Image 1 (cartoon, helix red, strand yellow):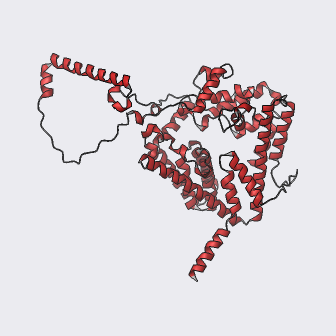
Image 2 (image 1 turned 90 degrees about the horizontal axis):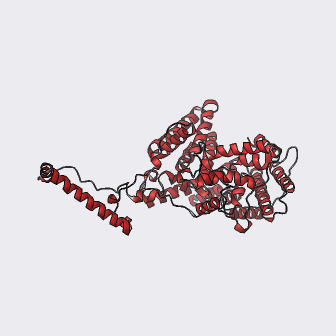
Image 3 (image 1 turned 135 degrees about the vertical axis):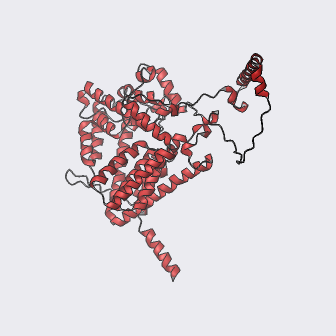
Length: 494
């Protein structure tokens, strides 16, 4: 009887989850496009429904998506590029992406309409638990690989992890770690509102593991507002615990992240700063093991050691008293302490960062060499840019519309200025793969955001971060679909 009761309870919990929604979320949020398409096909096979019910008043689904497609088609028709086959493919790709968004939001809406509130909550709970399991499993794998429980301080293996450890905590979506950070930031706020404090702490822990400074900053801002205006005593206590977790992570677990934030802040406000944490110490050749040297370096090391020995002999001849003192037998001092096993020197090559050029970077450098007049910032490296890439990108958008005011209303067109699609269709494996024979780069995009991207992502690795990536959703909507479209987006979704 007890076994039957336990089985019945287990079956009841299984049935209390919307498995169709859960599987759809797990697949559709995957970074690969073909997995997203497979998720749409699967969910419609399991639950076929095409009643979107778009209406001008009281629409079931947001009008944002059909309207943005309409503006994209309008720009395509008047752009003069309609006979350009490569751009035709770009427009069709953009329409496909917006169409997938319509199908996805329709299925999510169906799940909300067909299930009670608690079923939706339980489904979301399972999603966040699975994401946490994947994230923590990856972190455990890093610990096993490095042999250090805190890889955020581990500088071995050419600093493969160290300050960039969080980049590997991508979560169940396998997208960038920033995506995982944003999901868990939403989870913290969501479970704070529901007063599920264990899940709040779990989401906060995963968020910290990603090392996303910008997500931490925004979350702190939101929690500050909630702390002052919209929270109970219990919620305030949990928010303080979350803040303490953040302080411990920045101060003890990943202090170099703290230095990175402080340096970025000082640079932004034009204060004097040093980047010692990014400047590895040059290891003298006589301190490097022979296994890391080539034949010429070995000869140089032997010569250097020989010259040093001659120098020591010369000193002893000039000052025989000092030589006698140096060679005198010194009393043996016995220590009671346990001998310490020497650790690897962090000044050896394997503990220094390798700034190797990747395949994508090689493509970008080749493009700069071939088109120096179209990538003025990247080609000339004429100045150290003061602001992060995203801020400069918005400045570029402002100056572009100032020079082309007639494009302010409907934008430049799909894939012509700031979207991920614009980066993808360059055929340089930026933001995803794309057939090179169908590649397309609009000159407005090439001279603005793409030039800025080339500058940052062909520079030092320390500049290859999200804050320097010029594309953003808000910039995309404004630049490619105009101020009318972006204003509608802000009014509906914010």
